Length: 201
Image (cartoon, rainbow, N blue to C red; front, side, top):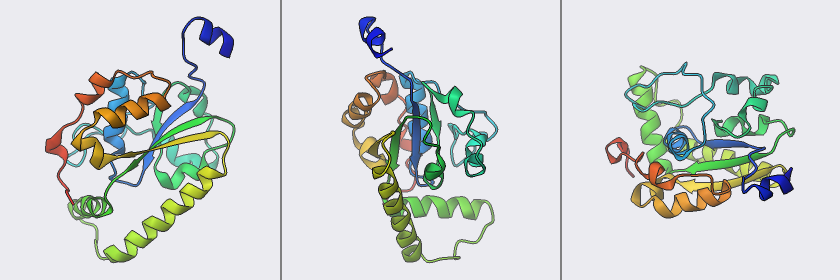
């Protein structure tokens, strides 16, 4: 198969592209960019755009059932991109190959954005302190790093949300290389909307 793909100049897409990261780390923006760049997203449209994400969340509800063993849908995800929050990455079955674009963002901006969402939804924001939450997030990210290092079916690329908003061309070129040069970078650059960068460190 690899020989035929090379013969006709086509790249293999026999893997699932995943966008991941902490909540409010820029995963929806990256999903939109990859969509515009030429990789179709696996979404269901159940969660609709709102004031927090006016351009949409790009989610697929069955992802939340990964811990229950619901992953047959991954067959349909080959050649596409799907969003999987970092807390669910370790539930991905080892039956598939994955390329993960993991979004990173300044932690104080993540906390600001999350608090605004909680306030809007009428939920308490003082369950834990920022310091405690920062430590919990760091422990979680360390666990993810260790897990990824132990997998032989995963390629991961860390992308900075903050760097993307300063000058996205170089970060996108690196992502394009990871994803077999399948992307239209110019179309992806048009996705960035500085007016949506509302929680700055």
